[in-house]
Image (cartoon, rainbow, N blue to C red):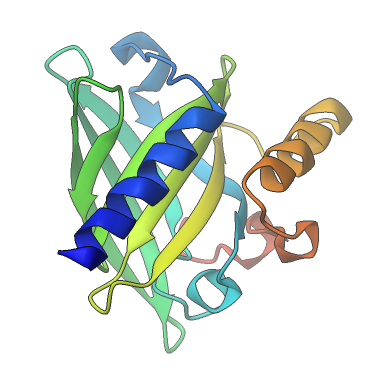
Length: 173
């Protein structure tokens, strides 16, 4: 029970940082790739880490009450394709199961960039805060990189944990 209350408290605190942005199928449906990822538990997003997700495709169902994400994870240099479907809740957050329980939402969006915040709670109860930037191009502009640094700081994630994933994405070529 104490572990559950701590998770609820942590999620409540992370909710207080930003309001959740709604997304529509026209903004989301299509091919995407992971541009950057930053996490407070770097092992989870390092090469071979279970949360180092290389996005391929996103698609909304039921007016984005469901968000399907198809992505690859490289384990032992082998690309493994996964599909998760996040279910949207009243607070605007999506939940899904992958490498534990995940609670994610959109922090910021443009026509070709989406910033996500995810709290992953693994099987042992360890929480990992992740900011993942998905895009329809290969990089962020200077202002967007600054925004990523600012978001990482707001979530108490060291900026040195930021990783540019495009150069290591051999799964989507």
